[in-house]
Amino acid sequence: MFGYCWQYRSDVLLALGASLAGMAVMALVPLVPKLIIDDVIVKHDRSLAPWAILLIVAALVVYVLTYVRRFYGGRLALDVQHALRTEMFAAIARFDGRRQDKLSTGQIIGRATSDLQLIQGVLFMVPMMIGNILLFLVSLVVMAVLSPLLTVVALAVAPALWILASRSRIRLFPATWYAQGQ
Image (spheres, rainbow, N blue to C red):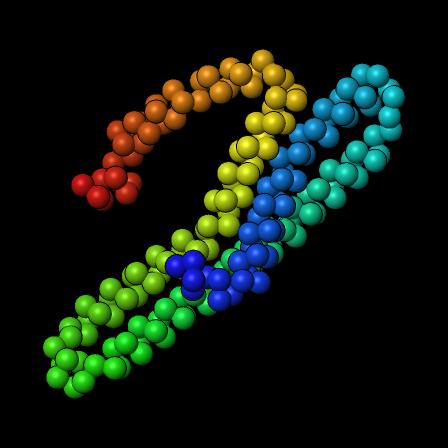
């Protein structure tokens, strides 16, 4: 899959770069309200206007980077899907008439459509998933800066919450993919 994606390396780099940059900005935004509360409201050392403008600029930057990620990630997904579809058609066209007659057309079309749609969906979501990993890691650093004790508590409780959420998902939502898989 990487080989197909790398044929469109500018789309890969733009989608991934926009995702990583956008998530980094989102993770750093909580530091601004901390400065506003500590330095503007409590100490009266700084003016509010630059920090408010910084929050607005950060929101605009995240919006633009999200647009870039979605546009180029979607274009990458569609381009790779088209390349795979074209290659699949070329492989079937190379068969002689007897081998083509043995193929079940409905099964091939149905399988190709569903598989390629899944690939397109995964490729569209990969930049966001990678960005979310960065968001998580940078958020931990920001949490440690804002409140080291709360960060330790969150890290200690997180595995138990993940296990509880996983088990609750299976028991509380029977119409989900888990039930469909059963």
